[in-house]
Length: 294
Image 1 (spheres, rainbow, N blue to C red):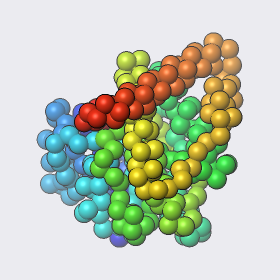
Image 2 (image 1 turned 90 degrees about the vertical axis):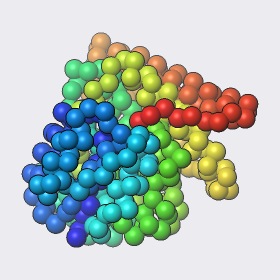
Image 3 (image 1 turned 180 degrees about the horizontal axis):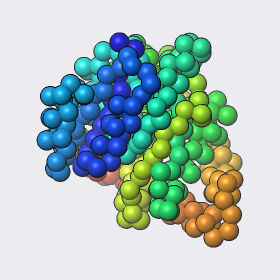
């Protein structure tokens, strides 16, 4: 089997249906779909049980443990030569896997990552999130600091086994960065393919947007702590690259829309900083770190 596509899901039954529908329409036939239910409390279990009975997906479920543990569970039963990750709020183009396969074959890569476009640009929080992620993908890969997100990335199965797969310590925030850092340390080729896009239907409101950014900050502290424990020198974006994110909205937008996105990016960076400081204080006080559910 060429690809195993692993889809974590948590309480997003309607969005998940769209994700799976797009996977069923792939023009590449040699793949399996593994959906891991991370303790959903809606009708996800019933829906996926039925899909599994029909042979459309392989279905796993466990109590809520976060993204890294959920992807790791899928990896344990995956049979594909390559592992493609996406999320339950994404819609994939019909040639998604075909494009990945072509890149792996032509580049002899161990990892290929793509980009995403906002499926609901009328939601400013969704748009701000994707503007930031796209900016850091483009900037990071230009600087030789690979940066991908788990909603559109694929790895050689062998390299994931070599590095131990996703680290279950990460519930939300920086789990993708940690995995990519370990894969990068193997010396294999990592390729950014911005033309491989998914459409991201982020349904966050302002409150969830801020919480999500706060969790990124918590995860970032854990990421840097883990890197120190491994005695590794972390890959760091220069300050100019971080500052550049505040101008990113003006790349394709003008006027009030761009200013609104800048304000949301400022809020996001404040939330990330707050999450990082919170985890630092927890560590300094010797308390047990508790990460929010995905």
